Image (cartoon, rainbow, N blue to C red; front, side):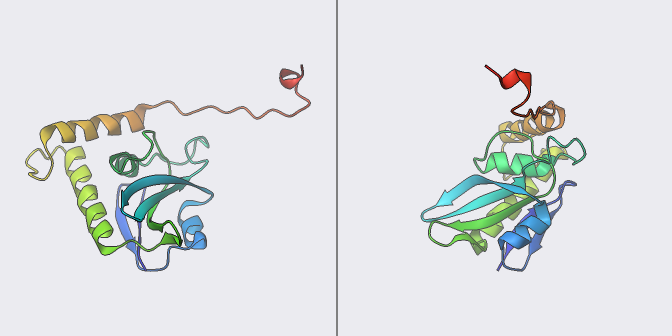
Length: 159
């Protein structure tokens, strides 16, 4: 009964409880699901704030964003905590399998080493470490998306 949370400070926390919708909402707030890695029928999913990036108050999650990108998720900045759970085509949200948990912990460590400038890490090559640094810079520097909500009475939507 395990899932992972990556806080905005980059820390990875293992939650030893069932990854229910309520638990995910308690960590992230209103969420969007992002598709991540697959191994056969089983996969992992990321759960991110659906308004964190545009609200202007939620800190960007540099480490979590890079981890999502490394797991084949969308290449964009995310703000707020990020939850990673297991996913089963039939049961949907499930706990992380032990091999997924270990892989995520190792990936998190490699990302942290790369961002700390540790070029002595033998698990990840220099090109990968530079790609991580470039992705982190994009997450930090990308402009905040703007959104304008208009009503049906607004002249902009009238024919």
